[in-house]
Image 1: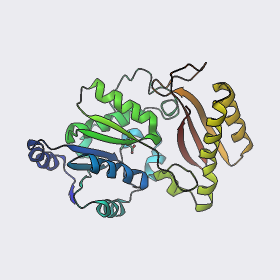
Image 2 (image 1 turned 30 degrees about the vertical axis):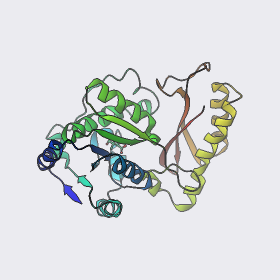
Image 3 (image 1 turned 90 degrees about the vertical axis):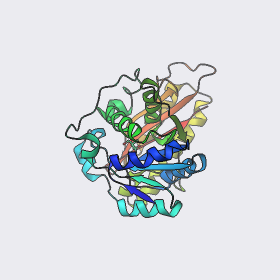
Length: 282
Ligand code: PAF
């Protein structure tokens, strides 16, 4: 496995590889890898001649400095984990200075409102930070395909919009959410939950499954209220939002339309840990 911490050295390594018109896949991560990331890496390996996995905890996407400090740093285990999948992976672990120089700031983007609701509303500047670092990583690696999990569905849509706006010839591939046996969506934040709360947190997914069933018979507003009531009764959870949106525009549904795909999105705190999840409703 090749590990590069300098973008200059990585770029020169990749230029030789690209001359031979091979296809390059990329999986951007912030480390603390789990089975969800591994599913992305495996898919990338199966569809490309070579794969770059980046591990970089991006400071500009954290609105809360405490959240940044608490973000787990597990580089040695991450590298072991990646090596166990394939010895051929190329891993990129840049420093903050290598990516941002002295200007640790986000760029401003216009994403036609995709970044304004839900995560965008509750985590200010989060998506401009994500887009800034992903644009930087893409312009260094120049992959043909890049892989992102659907757990961060809003992020996935924004990255699709980013490559379209920047005219980057990169196919963005969304991959299904990987879940723990009880249903909790895999996330690096789950590590901060004690085992007993991980089981309890599967309540989030179970509620989404029931919401999906109810959505077949009732209005979006009914389903939102129903979920809200469920969480009002569960005092160990603190619901931040439940939204039901058109899954392409992320505009909240007022009245269901035929031929439109809807998705429910949720953010919840349990024991101080913020978890997000989503489910396709039809
Ligand atoms: O999803 C993540 O882990 C991050 O938001 C990403 C895409 C690697 C950018 O830092």
